[in-house]
Picture 1 (cartoon, rainbow, N blue to C red):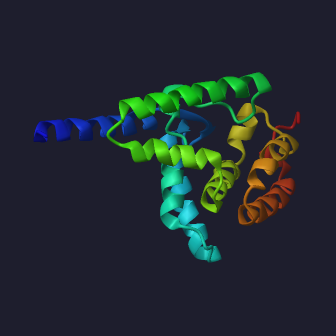
Picture 2: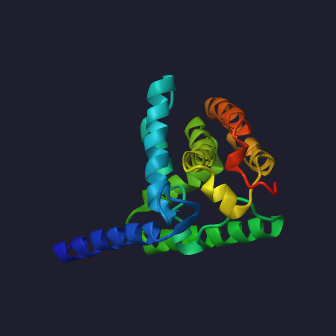
Length: 199
């Protein structure tokens, strides 16, 4: 294989990270007048996952947690980001787009099969690491928004009740993350200014 083809393959993966970074989420970047992107979110998820494994002495495979966290949303380079608060119809559409996105990812990056394989395993949520990352993925945005004085909740007109109803069943996938969720909800309940008055 020629060295130039190696460089081209590497450049293609670098370009994929650029596309990943260009996916904007529905949450404001804390303290900034812009929305956060998928790369920021994925790095934060990996970093906080590592931190919790250490702090809580969790018997989880760190490598799996880091890999799941880094690539859990990468199909959004094809499917785009979807609102967390979506209708059943929007959920069906999201699943179709993400399935098609994963197929494209497998084709476009056939020289990196571990990427698609990792996403498949994560989405099946059959191991404790994937459940942990899945639950933490739902909790961290809540902490970000709380630290940002509720700005995204005001912008999207979300009440604490709506948030809890949508997040709790998913966060319950992991018992440790769920404990943090309960603590956070108790804190949020004491700070109604974080939510729109109309709610």
